[in-house]
Length: 416
Image (cartoon, rainbow, N blue to C red):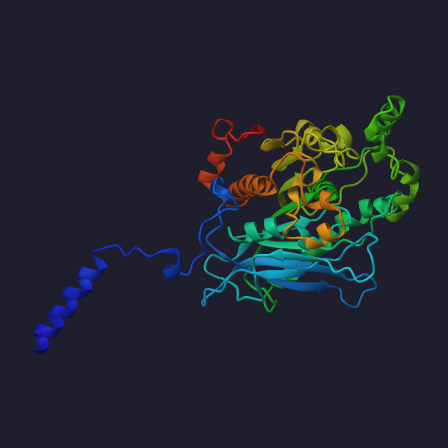
């Protein structure tokens, strides 16, 4: 009888192991692969990881501590809904009592998923005067594909004269270097995120002046001779984009002093970049201060994204010259036809303060559906980072020019 029981047990085990077990996403406790819209492209679908988030402060005892938010692959054994409300610092004049929040999709302080750790690092730089959490839709999405994303809150304030632009131009690249160094500390033995982050694989992404910050992090160098020539031509032609020159041109010497330089460089300024940065994604990124010679210093993979009707960082002052002038062998240009500047930000549903204050420019576009722009941006950014940081062959193939076909999108690429 005993031998017969053993035999039946062995046969039953053989039967179970001989047939595949099909489990749905809920049974496996993995996120459902859905996008924001039903027509979301492949890499706009939620990735295979749950998303956790934590907040930290770099140099909390300093006069100017740097607040950062981290998103990462997380465990979710209870199958909790990814729902969170982030605080958002509003860096412009608002009525007293106005509270900035961003509705997102992550698990606060969730445990780390170490299954495929360590994960590549992505530094995300928000736009000028924007809160780091305003781009949670993208940072969360990247974390769902196995990246650790850290976004610093740059110290700056928006007002009509753009008085903080010169300071931000100098200090934003330093914030990126501080954030990378902080990631080293987090990932080190005994660190809060020991073994979670691979700081030998780094990308920097950003929107607007965050795109400028990404270009600087890639080794872009100021070419003020070229920039001033562009500005002189713009002033002479009454170019409506000449206002971009106004906050910078008069204060170049002061900027050199802020940068710790003894005098104004006669040629290209020095680079402020960590050599471990492997790739960048500037979205509507201000590239004009680098001009042609300074952009040519960039050799790592770049995906530039922009809209042709952008009135804040015009396409010909941002995304297009980035693609044209960088020296990278692997590069791509994603162009949203007839899109304005804020297609990369949050929807109005996710940042209700913008509706309350009547500044829906921050969360909408005159032509494009914001969920569509987010899905497309998620697709391109995710495929690009999977390719350049993880060597994903399918993602690489998805970025080949003949593989890209989206209504309203013009796409150019080399090296794919």
